[in-house]
Amino acid sequence: MNLPNKLTVTRLVLTPVFFAWYFVKDLVPSVPSVVYSVVLVLIYGIMELTDLLDGKIARKHNLVTDLGKVMDPFADVMIHLTFFTCFLYSGIAPVWAFVLILWREFSQSFMRMLLMGKGKSMAANIFGKAKTCFYAFCSIYGIYFRIMMVTENSQPWMSTVSIVLFGLAAFASVVSFLIYINNVIKQGTLKGMTR
Image 1 (cartoon, rainbow, N blue to C red):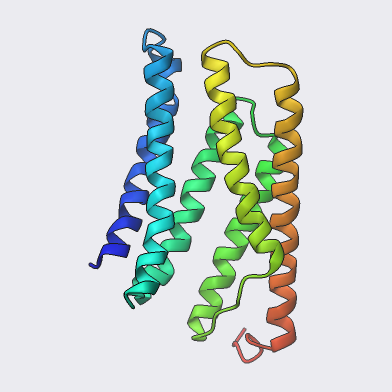
Image 2 (image 1 turned 30 degrees about the vertical axis):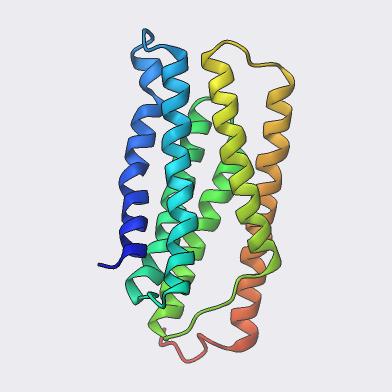
């Protein structure tokens, strides 16, 4: 397994670690808030850094593999859905936005499988890139909000910001998927598929 794929695996391994640590303060209130916050940010930071590095290293050193092409987007979905599940539990993410994002991610994964079966792929669109940015904003803001909650410094306006951010993420997510589907239909990529 090459270095980019090892970095992706690191991200996948850290996903349940983040999930478990997220709830530590609820289960063991005696954990100091500063320790909780620093570790939460550190785990998140390592996950984001490995996400940034795996693709750059793979492209720069011609280490792109079939495994990496499948595992990297899978890791992205696993990570973001884990983050958003945590935020949903804490009341940071609105249920309706979470459900739209969940439906989109599962549908997108299904479409990728169909296209891979045909040996095809589809380029990302502008809303897909916007979705990625909003997912990142939601993740950073969600962690910030969580830290403010456990340190008892959260403010009423923070919920409004959260609704707006997750709403924009859900909108960009759904629109990017609809554009993706439209492009698949236009190109007739799946036309010959037996039913």
